[in-house]
Image (cartoon, rainbow, N blue to C red; front, side):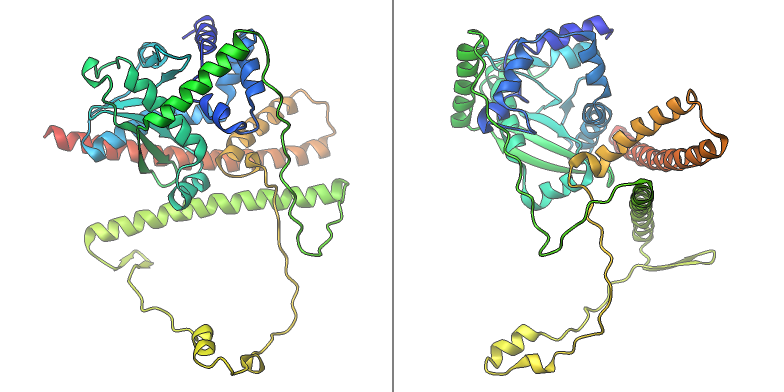
Length: 407
């Protein structure tokens, strides 16, 4: 689509309450966005600058990049036919539906032939890990309920009228970019939740959007700062301190990038050893061992204390010599960690390199600044190349699966 068409599409999203809007109305605040922010987004004038902001959003870029791949991988692994948008006409028009009884609307990442809506997420790895350990977050559960409801009351593209009123729910597919793996969570349609979402949407639209009355403002509550025991941290400024801290941060980023590369290489070695049915191999002068080991024996202090509650074990404890511990506590903001940091860092270093060429600088200082910029740029280039390699491997895996079915 050209810019004018994208502006028109964004204007179309002001027509009602979308699946990303419902969680804000239900929870009161999501990612620092409140119903007041939602009201403003529905009333403001959309311009070409909004299109540019959408295109610069790293989260949207990740979604647009990985959604087709994740949909193809899920279809290949599950054997369930997936109808996913392939063209701009499908993505921005055919896969969008409106609830005839409320201001709710939805657009889908995909539709499964067995009657499930497909919602694809491609978060950074630590968020994907949290899904596995803690389950789907409330935001995504409400978003999924919104999608399932809209699909259930509308005629769906490709699925047709036979699925109207028979949608089973939303199938959330979480694509783990670093592991090239999928998590799949099925969230069944809940009529009671659908009713609540409809009521929220009607109330918001009728009482606020149509009457031009903003919702009552909700003050954002800053999270409480946790105190690190009795330690008092002294804020230090100045070039020397900043250079030292920035150098450490860059080294930490390189360490994380190296760890991801090491994990990927380790997984590759384990896979080929498994396919060969071997647990010890030598390639040239490199030896690899992947063998189950007996568990390490440890002294169970709790069991001993339970059997002998009157025994004083403290007199058998030995304290080591004092030592100095160096620890680093990085920023807690999401933009400072994970894949968002990579996206933001790439854009920042690119901008700094472009500005560098137009800056009047002293030769010695310029060389030093350029070396630092080049080191950061090389780091991000290596990280992107590693990610592209993972994508290529996943595409080949999906293609092999499709070829196998065609034979």
